[in-house]
Length: 332
Image (tube, helix red, strand yellow):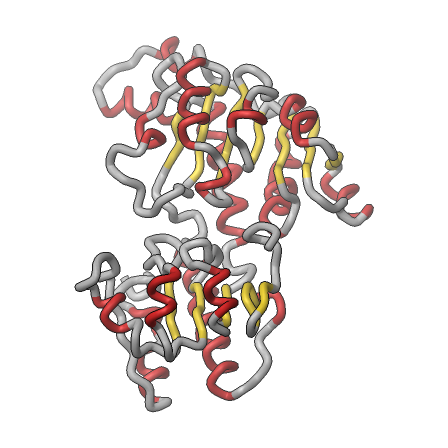
């Protein structure tokens, strides 16, 4: 499939262009261990391109060996597979393709909410098994209309999720963020800001994002939780325990604290008290074919800027020369 750009085979579609500039372009999925292509070639690399979906982890030790490395570009959005403090220390710029995934992930959020509320996964498994016990799946299926849905973070993805939820006639749309939306933007989606996280989650039937043991205590019993932001912002063991106990009725998303997720990762198989409630998938919400075209274009543009000495687009800069440029990966 030629549109599947983010693969070893199609190499982001930039090999010919890159080599026409007189540069060597090495593409590999060998990323783990001292004998991997990643670790062998990082010592000579000037530019590193990675994806957030099955990343090569750029640790502090590897950065110390990468004496020639000047630029890291995440083909997509999500650079928590890099030791960002070490890139700052070593004067390595880190860029993402900001905005390349916003529509794709916002749509995935709405899909995940619906599949949890409708108890879709157990219903589909029932069909695959040849069964037809409607009451077994309908007993935990709900409408989205009339529910309170909140998003932790109302940035480019969170806001688009709120926009896409409007036609479902939810009882209320809430958001929790360190800053208020502009008045016109909040009014456009009829969303109310809640300033305290515990207060926020206690009001929501469904929530997107940022949860560990303490906030989970304040969730409505039977709430649904969707995480498409970062795997580490939801405590996997706390979420699994909440599902098992019935405090959460469902958890869905595509981000994991380690990627690829180990085969025994608790969130691969965690279930609610009725044997459902798990909508986890591999990290692919932001890498639809449409998104791949966007992050291919953005990656090429960033490298062109670097090679020609042009300034990078500010919204793409995660780490500038010697300093952090965003709080997206925590206060630093």
